Length: 189
Image (tube, rainbow, N blue to C red; front, side, top):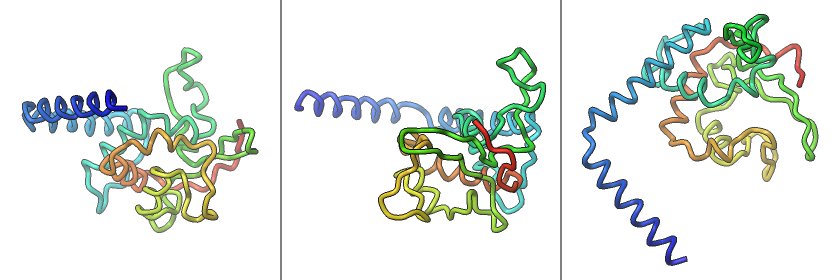
């Protein structure tokens, strides 16, 4: 136990020293790269964004995070548009008609589950969640609309809980900017 504490303290100290030595402009430049890359991804995939009243940098960073961490893998069914499956050697094109509208079915030992529609509802709330509710889901795996103690069984919240609140707020802001879609009419595996 003491070995872990010493190692942990040394790691923290090294991180503090390195972060103190790196100029803030390097960090800002990296984040700007991610923001611009997020817009590039959205444009290349044909995702329409509504930026009205939204922080452009959060939308861009959120696009980068959503589109490079696999949200589409579970929340879009099917993932790829006809003729756009890169695994089949086709030019990549995500299924924008069902983009993040849920519908992927999962069979687990705990039962059958269908991924949620995480596009904004009529009040601009992704998946119908307030920011506080979204953060609760991402940090704990509990949807505040579910009974106490229920945990999402398929969503990879144990990984997303390690994202910073700043990252999660960027994801939420991006999800507010994408088109609102009804629940996927053709759920499947």
